[in-house]
Image (cartoon, rainbow, N blue to C red; front, side, top):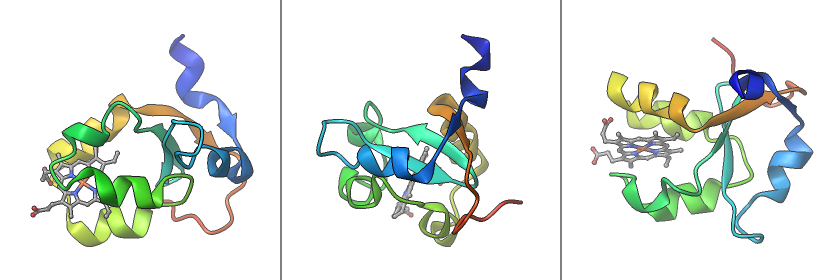
Length: 91
Ligand code: HEM
């Protein structure tokens, strides 16, 4: 569904998808991503993504200095927007 990217998701909901149920969600810049199918493809390795699953990975993502390609790739995995903004960076 085209609107699925605008689905509002709470940080508490994201936290549930920390890998314990087999799914890996991550907040980056206020967007929620389902990275379950991307773990093995990540050029930076699956460990970093798994360890930040259920959390806000914005700082880590920015610190690495990901390419524009990487930023664009993120969009492919978006499933919604964070509905509570605490502890999250927007730009
Ligand atoms: C949706 C989330 C992410 C996507 C789509 C993504 C994508 C990519 C891509 C395409 C690369 C290859 C280099 C580049 O194009 O910049 C890369 C490298 C890397 N990523 Fe990510 N990444 C994501 C999240 C993260 C997070 C949260 C971390 C935090 C630890 C991380 C750490 C790294 C590291 C350490 C490298 C290797 C850099 C290098 O070898 O120079 N990534 N990522």
